[in-house]
Every structure is written in structure tokens, then in C-alpha cells.
Length: 394
Image 1 (cartoon, rainbow, N blue to C red):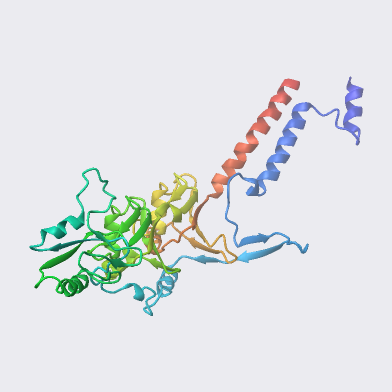
Image 2 (cartoon, rainbow, N blue to C red):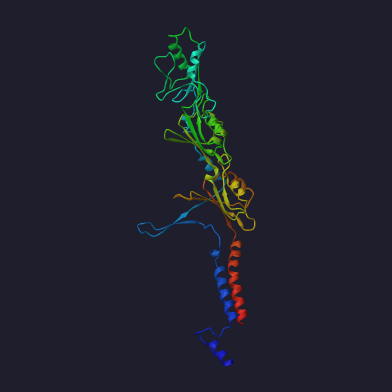
């Protein structure tokens, strides 16, 4: 036995004479040294500095290239620069929407109630009310036909009423009836408004069409008739489509600047849409207590501190506040990365003034000790298995 053992240990070509528990320990130690030499194999995400974007090869067969993305620190100068880059006072793209609304103009389908005093025989022309009519049915009266004309007894030629006010139609009727009656006394009012609508969609409580009437249809009036904003509405992203042109309206921003949304007058055929806040969410991930997609406030704004707060704040045990990043324009060809050192309380002032944009990604990196711990958690099962096998073999 002694001769066999010496022969085996002196052989340069085999390890068959080495005890099994030593082989297991050596293998575990080798693996441990390899992984501890650099924690790049740690599970989870890490932010590489400088950030590198790898472009895949194109159809022409050109090799992949790497593009370094600069990381901009979030400091007071950056916050001031971003504020200065906000749109300055210039031509207002919404200027054509402001104005005053005049009297209601009649249109095709409107129903008029025309009363001629001391001539009850003309009342029969109105027709008798039907008690079984629905609320959507027109009221009894004289309807403006498809050509915009209005017919009335004793008036030989129809009166063109479309585009005119009720007062103008009343004066024309008076002129025509004066040929038959002596100083006729009459009144003309709209019994049913049916000719013009505006359609409201999106995050309102009662979406659908709203009919124009004698009350001016302003932006706030239209939202009010639709039941007001829903709790999920983004009041900074209201879209108005008119004659093929799209207008983006920030109602919250108008109010903060002392401009009333009631000054925006809608027109027949306008389409109004209110966006949802969750369509412009911010992604918060990494070492936070509740990684999630956070939504902007009702005014459409969301700061970096708001996003971190909605995500349950930083994880005190695993996060590295020094490595707080904001990735912007990640879906475009020119992404941007910003970094905040959030270790000091004053950094929260910067975070509270750094406004996020829709689809931004907020990432909190982990600490070196956490990466070491995660590598160790991966390695320990292998070490324990090797040692157990060695002990059993021994």
C-alpha cells in the first residue's frame, strides 16, 4: 500500500492518488477566486460607467459598433439649464382657439317653436306633443330642413334659416306675416338643438357627443358637460382636433399662468380627447422597495423625488444612493443618462427640482457589498455540495 501511494503521488500525468475531499476543496477555492476577482457575474442589473450602447450589425453585414453615452451629473447648474430651455414667450400656437362666442346660429335639424299671438289656428301647425317620445326625440315644432329652409303657414316662400339666429328669423317672419296680418306679434325660440355637436373622448366621466345650444361651448363647458375629468385624467395633455389640425392644450399649465381655459371656444365638429396619466408613466427599477411604473400628477408633472417616493423610497440595505440614474429617450437614437449622488439631504432638493418626462427610466444601482453577497449566495451551494461529496467519499 505504501509503495502504491508513493508511485501515485509522484506521477505527473494523473491525480488519481489525491484524496477526494482535497479535490473538492481545490475546485471550490479555484471557483471562489475566479468569481471574487471581479463581481461582474453578480445577478441583477448594474450601471456601466461610461454607459455603452451596442448597435447590432445592419443588413449590409457591417460589424456591430459601440457608442459611448455620456452621463451628465444632476446638479444646480443642470437644473437651471433645463429651466432656461423651457419654451420662451413667443407666438402662441393656441392663439386661433381663443375668442368670444356669439349668438347661436341655426342649422339643419334644429326645431323652432314659433308662436303668433291672437292666432290660435297657427298653434295646430306645431303638432301635438307625444307623451311616449324619448329624450333624444325632437320637440314639436318647425324643423329646419336638409336645405336649411324653414316653412311656415301663410309664408309663400320658405325662409332660409341655416346660419341665422332666432332673432333674425323672427324679423323675417314678421315681414312675411305682415302681408297677411296687421302688426302680428310673434316669438321664435329654439325648441330642440340638434344641428351641431362636439365629440369628447378619453378620461372624462361621460364621454360622447355634446350638442351646441345657446350657452357658449367653451373648453371648460365641454368638459363640464362630459361629467368633468376622471380621476385618471392628465389635465396637461388635452388634444383638440379641428379641421385636420391637432392642438395640444395644457389646461393645468394655462391655469398656473393666469390664463383661463374658458377663453378657448369650441366649434361644431371639434374632437376633444383627454389623455390618461398611465399612458405617460415613469419606470422606477433597481434597489427600491417597490419597483413599479409610477404615473404623473394630475397636472402632468412628476419630479425625481416624487417617482422615488411612489416606489417606496430607496432600499436602505441594498441600494447605493450615489448611483441614482435617469435614462431618457431610451427608444430614440439619442438617449440621455443623468446621474444623481443622493447621499446627502441637499441632493433631495435637486431631485425635487428635476422634472421627469414620459417614459423616463429611474434606476437605483446596488452597492458593492450587495454584489459580493449575491455572488456568495450563488457560490455557496456549489461549495457545500463539493464539501459534502468529499466528506462522504472520505
